Length: 374
Ligand SMILES: [Zn+2]
Image (tube, rainbow, N blue to C red; front, side):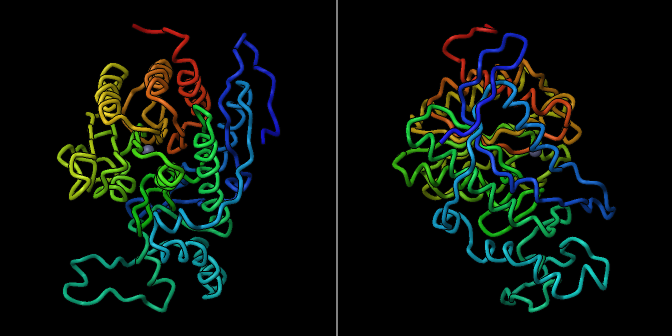
């Protein structure tokens, strides 16, 4: 299964014994822009992110494992099949409508959204025009679809499923280098630079492989509103997140508050710890401990970690101030919880995101043998 393994890097580093699942297709998604507050800005979720991560992990000695193709069974259980079909087809339909060629619209960007306030008592229709239909499945203007996007989106799902297979098959840890990320995607709507929810798919795959109780621990700087929504009414998949307070003006604005605790059978199985902008290692790790304690209390059989490194002090997309040491310590604490599938989410500072992920995974791999902090 393992096809390439580089030698341990310089600096005397011990080879990192955690498989890194990789799909070359992840490079094909080039959103190019994001329309943010009405202005077309260069996007930060760029293909170079994936190369920086792969190269850093490979240099640390981690074996790189190719993602294996999976059918749509788990994907279509987690997501509305209409969302999956839309993403698979929308670029071709956008092109066929002449939008790139005749109108200069080189990416799919919705402009009208069927909110409850628009519809009132009317039924939710599926508009025939692709430029009208685009807002049926997407909730923002900054998550663009281009010609290579679907290959990368689907490749990220295979990447997550392959990592879940490795852990179900006995590996203690596996890391899925998913790009684009996924934790903002609900059952039937995408946004937040995410298209399909890789972490939710991995969690469902672990359940299907026999894990009775799964915990999803989300340490991305932003609340994983999509993952929360998918499991909000389920008792078998717990979701916990620490993130910058959406009430302080941060994405996703409408979700991520502390009083969102799950509902129905899932009541009590959702835990949000919003953090003030400027929170650094001490506050961040204290919040992480609250979530780790809850995971232990629930006696989870397997863990999915939504690993965003955008909480780092140098990241342009969040005001949290976590250091590389903080991430290493987080990895160590998470590694003590049991078998875990790490899913890459955010992290946008190209110079530091590789070392941050290496520190986290290295911390998790070595939790039983290193004591770097008290
Ligand atoms: Zn994020």
